Image (cartoon, rainbow, N blue to C red; front, side):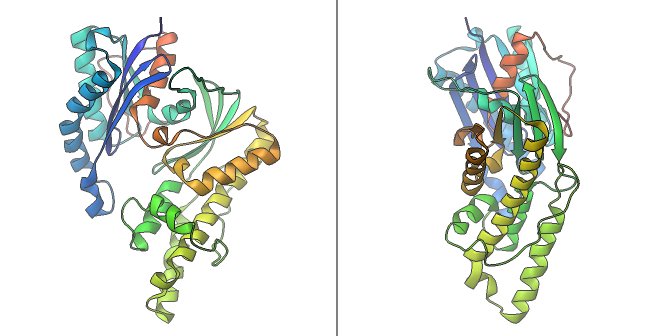
Amino acid sequence: MKPLILAIESSCDETSAAVLAGLEVKSNIIASQKVHEKFGGVVPELASRAHQQNIVPVVDQALAEAGVTLSQIDVIACTGGPGLNGALLVGMSYAKSLSLALGKPLVFVDHMRAHILAHFLHKGDIIQNVPLPMLCLTVSGGHTQIVLVSSPMDMQVVGKTIDDAAGEAFDKAGKVLGLPYPGGPHIDRLAKLGNPNAFKFTIPDTKGFDFSFSGLKTSLLYFLRDEQKKQSDFIAKNLNDICASYQNTIIRYLQRKMEAAIEEYRPASIAIAGGVSANSALRESFTTMANQKEIPCLVPAFEFTTDNAAMIGAVGYFSYLSNNFSSLSDVPNPKAKI
């Protein structure tokens, strides 16, 4: 009998709850927070308040859609970090209360590990084949990592950003260009209409498999400043080409590092994960690269790319199998690392 898992995610600005039977997703409810759009970024205090409002109805809806009751749940999994401290505290406090009231074991999950294990999730009877070891590029608003996955519970970070993340580079660019928050999806959409070679941005030079995006953001800012001095409506007239060129630079940079890591570690498969893995150009680029190298490329379903509770449940499942449970005395770890 597969264990029934109730999973909760509240690390940033999405309140999510899911029910899984093993790795099979029975429900995955996500309540997004629109309150941050007018601020151009996530406001931690507002995020915490929204989580408090959303968490009970989101959990109720997840249980109802899965057709199960709380008494049937075998284990409760919840994000423990990294993330916003107040946001994490809301989810963890609720999970602790359920664990204590129901007498069910509790698992606090590493959010970045969950993004990677989203590749193991499935709906219905079609089970995802994940050849191991896998080399996974995890790209989100707060993280950019290359992770060597030897098993679901054995992961090693072999490359990471030394400053900003790829998702932040997209969103900050979107803000400078006057696009709605979050900027990444809008840049992806506009880039399809532009020329990726219209403007040149220098790919950062970092050692090994590490990344740096702060210089790239600055170069875009200075480029736009200089061009607007010559032509005040430069952004409006060249928006599609700017988006295409900037996005192309980021994707070429990510791919260059992954190609080097593939040569070093010779994985059985490669994968992308995290919110930025929803970017259409990144998906196409990595699929093409994998075909050229004759190696399987795992790309997550769109519903498992952004922050969601189903991926938290995947870690909860493997923790349950290994009897690796958490304590009611555990506290949020906003800067947790794999």
